[in-house]
Length: 106
Image (cartoon, rainbow, N blue to C red; front, side):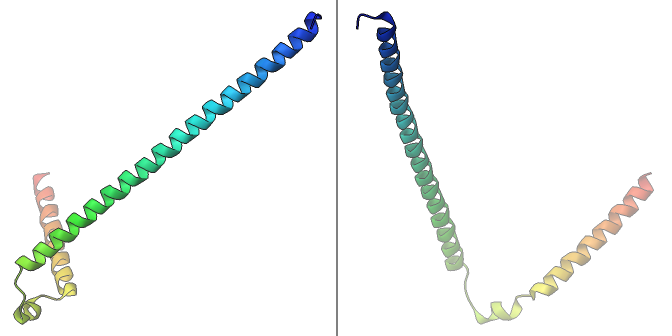
């Protein structure tokens, strides 16, 4: 390699190959860490979801165990539609009262 142009060409080519390999290695490491982070986050979210579900299930079971069951409860429980109608009537009454209050305070 006595010709400086030939030497510069091969040095440039070797430098580019080394830089390319280093870039490839760094990119592979970054993607690997990103994949690991993603997997850890998914696992953490799964564990969190399981804990929430377990606590909710436990609370539901405790509530059902604490409440006595009887056939009288089933017969005295109001109909859902009836409850909704009563709530709507209360809301209408409150709106009317609020409108009266607003009209008298102006």
